[in-house]
Image (cartoon, rainbow, N blue to C red; front, side, top):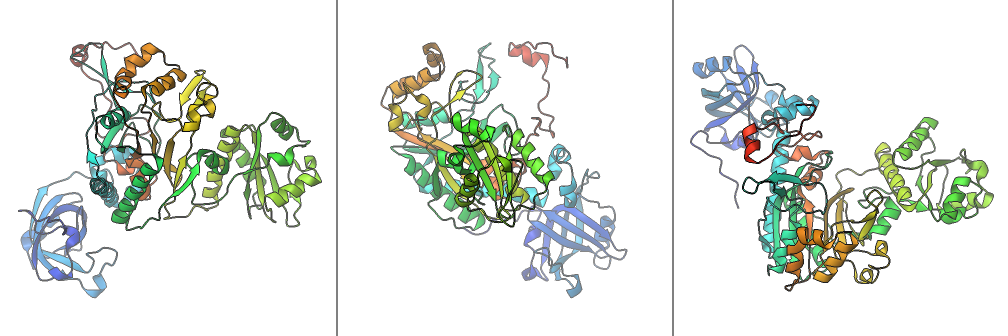
Length: 598
């Protein structure tokens, strides 16, 4: 397929396409004034469109009309310019832009739209407060950064669609106005005018619709779909977001993983020109937690966590003795060449550990003579010192960071410290994409606040074959057929092999403390559908926004979304959310309660 044709009745070329081959050719351009420089006898204009910049020259000897018109032009004016392409003088070549070898001497200039003084200059975008950029998003989107980001996003979607089509998938749209079901985060509710007192819910995912399509005989389906979750926002999370969702029949875990690895090979090759090596690394949830303290490990650096519980089986240090006696863990990180950390640095690490949930953090410096320097040194036996040295391969300059607590807390705290230290010590490789599959997740976790089991992924995830035998007696030991795909420490997708048996699905609902009336009200259609011959099936949902963010080397998904919300859940350009009229509320049979703002 050739390059797109951008010629219109108003322009012959786009700004970024002007090159040496067009020298002495007459062309017409349209765009925004990026910068104007008046040198008295000559006026220079940098004209910008989505494709880049080109320099225009207004010379009264060439066209008095263009020169006079250029006197009143300012930044962000929209203009049409006709003229002749010529080679720049050698000392005027600008190697920083693709069009830097040429310029266009203008014979005719027309102002298509004037502009007020913009609230910020695009070349100073990185210095502008994000809220200001979001309020004036229509200006911010003109920047080369946002043009690049949204085109990157488009390219990812285009490559994905091409891959799915060649792999036998069909694209099927599922409803946006759906049923509210208790399976995840808080729903966004939409009142029904036709059925007063009843509500639709915006889908948190198309999960149940995807499964229903599998029951209906469609072998492979996908969609690139908007989803909605009313939860706390952060740099990589929005209230509305885009997923690449797919579902397949007659598959096991390896089949889904193979399809997704093929997808990423295609996307990275076509969009970034990077050839990924597959298969990706695969580790169990347990290994991921034990080694990296997270179920979404960043593998661009080392710093694996070590378990040293056995070394302290006879410890005289009370906190270690208590951990061993109660069946808890003692785990540590070892930093090579980090003994130069100051006491202030170490105190900061102790505070960071406490913020992550630890009761405290023990540290040991290894001196040049292999002596241990630490507040806990006097409690360590010679055997413990020897065992630590040999087990952890300690060397002069090493620093040990030790946490004694339950398994979950030890892993989380050291996992958080692992990432913190990698950033502080500049250990994270740049321009590297490290994928890893994490699988064998527990099926359930215990919710202390609600005193009941909850699903790690969602209640439609199948337990593994061994786990089915443990459901009645030891449900917390049951492993699931769930899998997450992680890239550079961010979960960019999660999926599972689904339950395809009505009896097993009802048992899972019961273990989740859902009574028969609740199940019938919320999932009756699913149980009914499962009773009519449901094939084994599985799928995955990929975070489109998060993937684009990582591929673009960005720190926030707001940079790859055209009109995002702030972390306070507001879209600043249009002023959303906003009040609505009393008439609109009456039509929906809604009456607002008094609030402090009323």
